[in-house]
Image 1 (cartoon, rainbow, N blue to C red):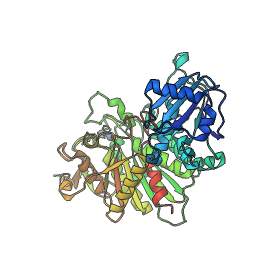
Image 2 (image 1 turned 90 degrees about the vertical axis):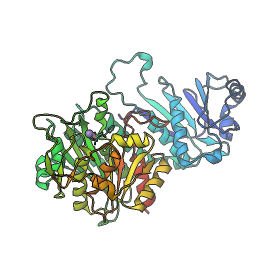
Image 3 (image 1 turned 180 degrees about the vertical axis):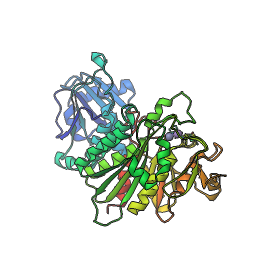
Image 4 (image 1 turned 135 degrees about the horizontal axis):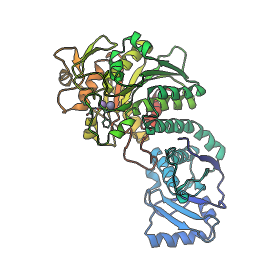
Length: 500
Ligand code: BES
Ligand code: MN
Ligand code: ZN
């Protein structure tokens, strides 16, 4: 939900109200502007630090309520640790920590973007502001009964104090675009499936037109004509119609092959006839996190006017058991012409991707294809919730994704593809079956299935985000169930390697 945060930049000046957040290093050293603003309160800070054994370690915080000599109601000192160790993503974290120290009831905060050596660089201050923005997000549109003291204020205002406010504002502009994409992705993932079904998801992508993205929706008829029977088979047991949405952003040279991003958009995954157990099934409203990421990414690229051609294609379905639902044993012919024996109707994401990936390759002849999908529980067994699984047919693309992951903190771990695994999805009755037959290597056999719908000349990477797309371990810049994972990763990939 677009939150109620007003975020701005201003000069270093001791604020008259609200919360003041300042940073110190692991020697409890402040920058000159911070020292000046603290004035006599610096002594209080020193005493409080002693009393609390606060040493300015990275991420540690010291809080003083109504500190004498200052007008603010609360002073928060956040440790940066050793300044020399700070990496770019740490500035986001500092912003997140700062926002986390604003009590729910506080309507005003000032964050001094300063290190002991002086004001942070505009880029660093802008990263702090991005951290504030991402942390401030809360999905609370369905909460109607909160007590007075739990209610957030109508409007929250955070000012990031910097040396050069204009330069920081300029540096923040593209980041603001990226933040918008992340928050949009989080909203989509958090929405319940009775609200966000395929047609409604498609409707929400229309908002991207405002930023210059061309949006096209394929309905059932169009998909039938294209032969997307693998995707259609998944959706046929639902009262909600399936959709495919194509989003195009052309910020690069006319005629340049686009970068393609493809998302699994299973708006709800009951498992179908191979129905899932009841425990935690509600989480399957987030089975469209791949599609949400692609949508948020397209929004971000357009909002910051990325100098690149990109296309986002998402397959939107609902996987339900019903009289019309697909059965185990059914055989469908995918758009690629290959036949698939359905062994387990709960292995539906790969069926959706098979058609959407084939369609994207045929229509757009992209420079590369990256698909994102909450595809397998097996990837969570393998990697937990910290790294997403990455499968790729191209080393350069894999390396670039790894680098972008390290830079943004949205990390990917490369997993293997090999003919031996590929054999596991051969079928007795059709060209392939949709599961590997055993649970072993389940994320890999899923990737092998997708690979059969990718021609090997197109660089391709598959990101299995089942562990990171939702319910991922919350961190300093994310307190939301739907994490918006991947938007910053892919935005960074594009910025660092494809816009030059
Ligand atoms: N959407 C699930 C995977 C999933 C599980 C995502 C948990 C996030 C959290 C996917 O459609 C699925 O059901 N996969 C099956 C595949 C199996 C039937 C081969 C799985 O992982 O169990
Ligand atoms: Mn499933
Ligand atoms: Zn699924």
